[in-house]
Amino acid sequence: MIKKVKTQTLYEQVEEQIRNMILNGAYRKGDLLPSEKDLMDMTGVSRITVREAIRGLAEVGIIETRKGKGSIVLIDGNELLARAGMEESTGYRRNFELATETRLLIEPEIARQAALLATNEEIAYLEQCLIQGEKKKRTGSDVESHLEDFHRGILKILDNPVLAEFFDSLTRLEANERYTTLVPPGRQMTVSQELHAQHYKIFEAIKEHNGEFAYFYMKEHMLYLKNTYTKYFDNFFL
Image (cartoon, rainbow, N blue to C red):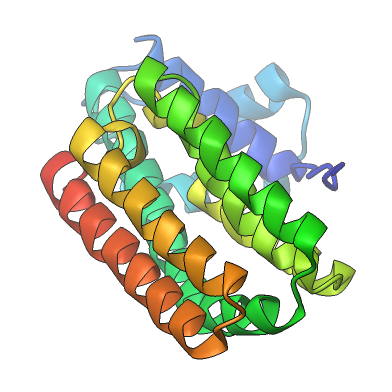
């Protein structure tokens, strides 16, 4: 899906330029930034824009403006980089948790309805998702995509494009390429085996058209995901 392009305001662009100068060491902790007039000349923007950028940097503690002296840099490039990483990881964790909590609320009911509506062809497709997931699990490659394929296969049974789009928005919140160098639970062998075992239980309930068991097993599955990833975040991101 094509996403709307976000545009920066002028003052945000000036803020970013100053941040980058701190990151590359042009300005260090304790240094004075150029005067408002010099910043206007350097960036080609108005005094109002420069002041807005300075105010924004001061509000987040990157600089401090002292009357009669100017704007002093409060952190060096390494500190700024560490802070940026912490803000991103905290934001990612929050997004993941919100998405997973939402899925916990809706996916058990989706599984229940799927169990009641599934055709033989749709059940066969879910079984193929599980078989392909087993193959990927043995090779250790791209396991997570097949885990999501199984969930999307269940959702497809309901034939609800609005719900499908909502589900995709939740899975996007759970994804972050920054952390592919780590080994998230979905790629850890013990957890992966448990996830596949849970998927088989959900599948069998849907195959038997048992809505209550499908609901229960999906809820059990989503709770396991939520608790497992919470421990993961506690170990790696905080």
